[in-house]
Image (cartoon, rainbow, N blue to C red; front, side):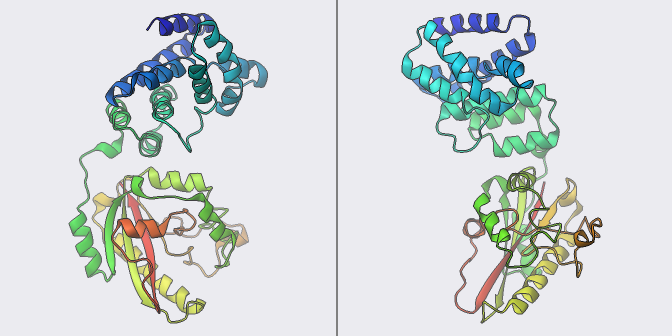
Length: 351
């Protein structure tokens, strides 16, 4: 398009002597166009997307001069004011300019993405940044599962980087269900981690400290990690085995009985994991428990000492902010089991 040609020339002039920035926006522009084509994006949205791809990082120069860095949030703050007069000079329509400036102001914000132009811009930028930043295989896998949502973008990410989770290993769901039944679980299921729903608002359940472990246990908040860190830890792996047990607990206020049953549930999960085929453990799989770790009578954190069992300690589903009711529904499991019956859930994340 003629407008894009003129804009490219303006952006090359803007970044005179900075080949890294010039090549970056041209690569993002190319990947954005590829994904747009694969997703059959309509002409109007594609025009906005490709325009935004060319100018998405226009705030970097000002940020480096003003703040001494190119922090993404600073780019979002400074970029629109520079892009707007440039696009107006090239006679871009005001609604296009408004949307492009919105995308510039959000291209490092990965929540509440509100349109395919926004989603594809983020994916195209990631495809370039993952390469330019020499991202680890772990980071690439996490991005591929957590950031990429368009089929074309996911395919490109897997083709360009071939992260290790795209190998030939595939767990046998039928075998897992059979082994779970033999181990005494009420229900066992296999799920891909990108299907798990996380809600950071659930962290308040831990902050309420009904279990008494908040701030005094390595596996519990705030010491286990932020909500984003916990989510990313799960999404860095491809699969999870979900375990359910049911227990007769007539009094839901009977904390001693609940603690006892959760302990038995967690022991069953640990035994199941210990007996798993080694191929399920090659990439650092880990357990998510029904409660905070209780392997020690008192967590070593209280004494300012390292964790005694770092390989066995496991955080609970609340610490990971996993929406367990949705997880149960996806796995065909009961969540509300009726009067006097309580269900507990655990996971093994792997692959």
